[in-house]
Length: 338
Ligand code: AHM
Ligand code: MG
Image 1 (tube, protein in one colour):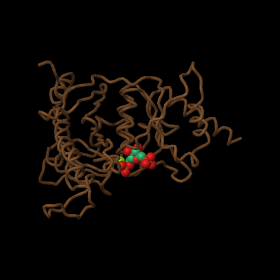
Image 2: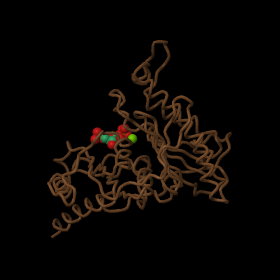
Image 3: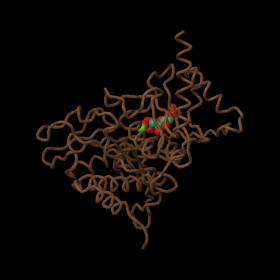
Image 4: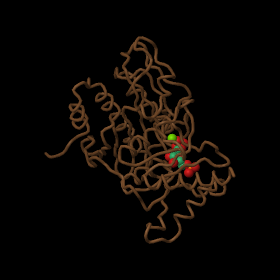
């Protein structure tokens, strides 16, 4: 059989680095297992009474959980005892999550958004799990701290997402390109389906919530109008595609080319999306695929985080498009400062 499972792919990637211990491979394997369970539950969402609020009971009189809480619990349960992690943090939990001291403590740090875009679940729209892995920076013989979690994105060792869409796909990078695997529902394995994904340098798609137009930066308003103008040479007008589910929007743009934006606006000066759980892992993936990610001014991966749940504006996708929006916004700032 001429196909490659995720497990085999990870092992073969690791063979390229003689100093590798195999720990990262096992970690990614545990992670993929957790997402398979989440995928099953997501697929059942319309059938089982799992969409009620936390605390409701289902037809069996059992307590049901909202799917995002379920996904969070599943990630923690699958990852806390593997021996690879020293600390975790989740978008669903205020504080960092320590590894119980009776488990082996490893050298990696895991940050995740267990179910991004979960407000879309009821409408059967694609949602996803996003993960980001760092090496610990505090000494091995001490309890890991917030410092281990608050590292800039360029320190990521690996990052990825799983999209629960028309099929379930896991896309990851460990710093050596971006690889995509589709879950075969028949035998429950992720199979390599998208080898070394490269995103187009320039695109024809923009993704942004245009309902917020009134509150945007003038430079951004001008940029969007520019994309809507007709100009054959530069391939305008662009198409607008916005699902409202970051994993799905970024995934489509990764494959077809495109720019995804969640900007700051006059009501939300830091935008909406989270640096540690959404923006950094996606930025690592996009850069590895040849794209670019910024907060409008700075490279996303160079931002020094201050808070675990910090929000940040994001412009991510095809390199030329991200550069163009940065230029539009910078020009307006120069004008405003005169
Ligand atoms: P969530 O973490 O509460 O699910 O919110 C994140 C989601 C992203 O997936 C998506 O890009 C964004 O929120 C959409 O926001 P909006 O509805 O404001 O356009
Ligand atoms: Mg989220």
